Amino acid sequence: MILVCGAGGFIGGHLVERLLADGKEVRAVDIKPWAAWWQTYADAQSVSLCDLRDPMAFVGSVRGIDAVYNLACDMGGMGYIAAHRADCMLSVSINTNLLQRAWRWGVDRYFYSSSACVYPAYRQAQPGAEGLKEADAYPADCEDGYGWEKLFSERLCRHFAEDYGLATRVARLHNCYGPMGTWAGGREKAPAAICRKIAQAQRSGHHEIEIWGDGEQTRSFMHVDDCVEGILRIMRSSMSEPINLGSSELVSINQLVDAVEAIAGIKVRRRYVDGPEGVRGRASDNTLIRSTLGWEPSITLAEGLQGTYRWIYDQLD
Ligand code: NAD
Image 1 (cartoon, rainbow, N blue to C red):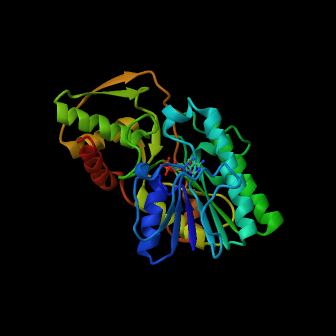
Image 2: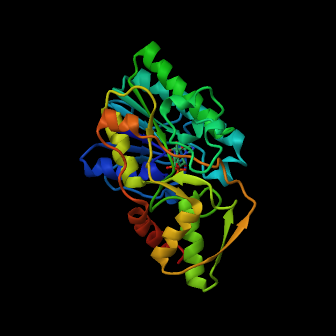
Image 3: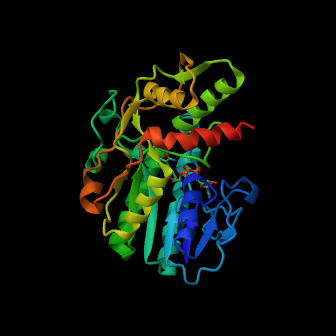
């Protein structure tokens, strides 16, 4: 039995779908009420309204759980994490409780979803900055709140492995996008936000959108199918240190807008406004994942945005 925590969310939902397609027995857990899950599954056991910050939270029968995937976290895009630092940091109790429980249950493997937000601001000060290598995380100067929670949780995984022999796997996810994830309401990330704004422009005929900052900040964006494939590969691997999981296709936010415009078939006027734009330049260095797994994310932004844009366009109904 595989326990997926945060299964009502974006990546957790896609992971459960994939595990079920692979014929696995899955228990899906989330704090959200059932109606708010992005995906629901007839073939998985599901537990809703389960607050994993509570060390006694009921996750169903624990007999026979052999793997735990922890994707549960109070998070969102820059707009959310910059305004909710305490809430983001409280997710530390989710990983703390789950590690202790996983060890007591005697699971074979434990996966933790860390983030590129652990990387220090001083390495991300310029657009087009070099790809971040895993070793660059130290000396630490993480994204305030959310990034520190991720770095602490990474270390907790490491010490559970060293001291208790629990086999932990940690991926540092770089921006992930795709259908069936948050696209409005304040937690959405840049690809979903830009898709929504351009879809609204296309529908309304008012061809103007707002962009936070000057649009020259650079990022890499990974399609959720690559993200799920990478998580499964990292979980199976012998890699016990944190490893980057992200696309190496670097684009500016302006180029992201160009790509969505091309899909929508419209051009929009860009109004640059003050907003929490995050670091100036972030990219994933994939040397380690290529050498250890012989694999890296490969879905291009132009390919991956097609289905994402269509899905968000339809959500506006
Ligand atoms: P998401 O917000 O869609 O999913 C997270 C889920 O965790 C939500 O459904 C939420 O209800 C659940 N959750 C939150 N608090 C909980 C609690 N106390 N108990 C039980 N469930 C709880 O986010 P996502 O994009 O699917 O991200 C999944 C993981 O990957 C997170 O750990 C996130 O930090 C990490 N990550 C994501 C990205 C990305 O680009 N999406 C980038 C880096 C890291």
